[in-house]
Amino acid sequence: MCGFVGFATNTIDIDKEQVIQNMMNTIGHRGPDSDGHFVDGNITLGFRRLQIIDLSTVASQPMFNEDESISLIFNGEIYNYQSLMEDLKEKGHVFKSQSDTEVIIHGYEEYGVEILQKLRGMFAFALWDKKDESLFIARDFFGIKPLYYTQNTTDNSFLFGSEIKSFLKFPGFNKELNKQALKPYLTFQYSVLDETFFKGVYKLRPGHYMIYKNGEMDIKQYWDIKFDTEENSLEYYVEKIKETMEESVKYHRISDVKVGSFLSGGVDSSYITALLKPDKTFSVGFKDYEGIFNETNIAADLSKQLGIENHKKIISADEFFDVIPTVQYHMDEPQSNLSSVPLYFLAELASKHATVLLSGEGADEIFGGYAWYETSKEMRAYQKVPFVLRRAVSNLAKLLPENRITTFLVKGGQKVEEKFIGQAKVFKEKDALKVLQEDYKHAPTPVEIVRESYQRVADKDDVSKMQYVDMKHWLPGDILLKADKMSSAHSIELRVPFLDKEVMEMAGKIPAHLKVNDIDTKYVLRRAANEVLPDEWANRPKVGFPVPFRDWIKQAKYYQIIREVFESDMAKEFFHTEELVKFLDEHYHGEANRARYIWTVYVFLIWYKRFFVDMED
Image (cartoon, rainbow, N blue to C red; front, side):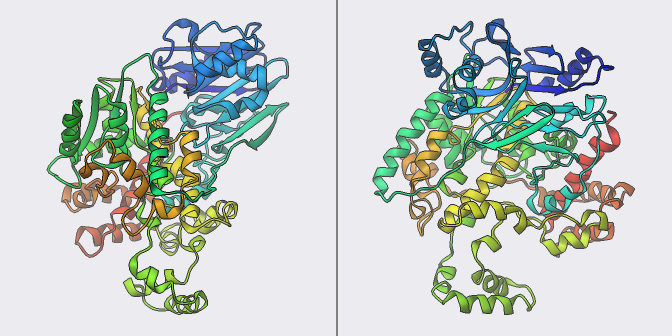
């Protein structure tokens, strides 16, 4: 878990050394062990290091080839670096370190941008080729590592890096709010557009790279998720999962520092823990809650059965509310997945004992673990009615008052492309438009945002379509971003063995009916996990990372905290605040569950205050 930042500028009246140092200091939490920078004409590179592999200074960054015509800053891990290193040595390349970083440099010398096809790991990097006078920037297959870029500067300087907040220290950066980002956020709960909440600042998409040369950007895709199913028996795929996951965990445990694992009560992290068998596991729960809001006892029980030491943290409501501004600062953009906050505390706990942590992110997306992927028994029966009739009924039901029956009939006559936009669906479009001020209503609809993804898998089954949409939007925009930002806030590296290129290739061949069926979600994965886990853990229903926020805001103390923010002049810039207070009161008095609406707006306002009101550039 390192961090980098850089810029290309023709401006001569700035102190590049001081500017890059200021930008690096902003992301010091990503790499507390050392820093380094490099200036070559118009190009300036900066790096913060968290030592994981090859702890010597020889492995520091920026790293160079022999004649220093190539320089690299790199965040992540290349898990197959040892075999790549041997291959490159056979081709005549000379290595000065034992680090995975150097593999990218010599791999680029040998293969050019095609080195990306040979990498197995998580990464974001920027490579300066002095001879070609080009900058090669790339992001990993799934978007595990973040990578931002912008030219929204007073002199057209090009900035890039691991976190947006570092851009604020560049003297020519134009800090502006992207007004189009707010409406989609209210529905998706995360920043879903390529352009971030900072106007003109973009995310490089997962599986893409950029060549920046002569002031121009050329972006290309080098990898994509594929679902090419092959009919084989359940037993066949159980064995394939076991083999592939054992190998993935073996690669992901490579480290020169201590390795542990995050452990909840669910099958995903439990499976990873059982395969890894670390010395220590880490869990969090909430004070005064047992069961759904506190699975620490379940995690402790499994750890005990596996002979592993478990550490846990119990979070109070006051602790939760106090840390929200800090969490949103580290996120860079507003993100209202409630689990980000307990993940922050979990990373803080783990950082006292280990530097590398393995976790279960990605299993639900790859192996079909979400309830959305299921079709209820009632819906399966209804789908036997010809679609043309169901469509007509759906159109009629839209005209009737909304209730459980009309919702069922509407969805029953829709294609998956019309009703599924991803795991998070907070505000309905009509409610978002009702609550927003006019300047913030103009943005693509949720269906328009995911349309391109659906077009890429138009010939696939509905489960695969939903998985693809989630892996293109929800996974990098929410799940992986919070995993990266919350772990890096505490200077640890989080690794996700399910999100391995080889695991995806194998899982993409598994037919949908072996992933999601009448018996369970993630059916085939649970069967594989059951080989090393007790039944209780392999078959445990998915509960996510639940937070008792809906209960807390029925208490006067926390109700009042949120109401003051909702009624502020700051809030009136974006929202019809009487509608916000109405949502809050409905929830407080038990008339409706508005917790997600309330939290999503509250988080945005806390984020905006942190970056646009309180922060000095």
